Image (cartoon, rainbow, N blue to C red; front, side, top):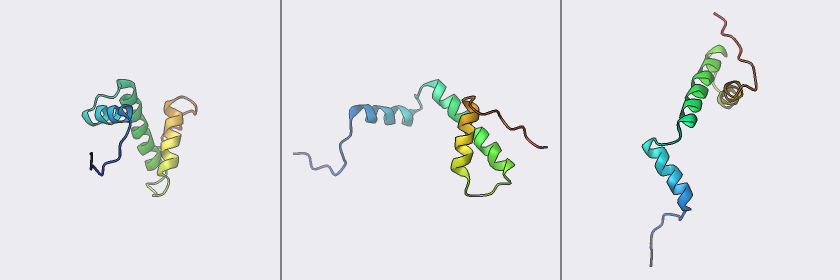
Length: 76
């Protein structure tokens, strides 16, 4: 009898977590995510570093990285 309090999950979910923990996710995911992170931070800076728009920044960055929305140039 297994008395573990840990909930059982599917093996595929466990495998995905294990790969993520050791950094073996496919390269296209990590490169895209890194580009999205950088762009979301740029958007945050453009907004004057105001808190509360993180999700919108991330979603806009994803659209731009995926090419769905033209990138807004930095105002220097």
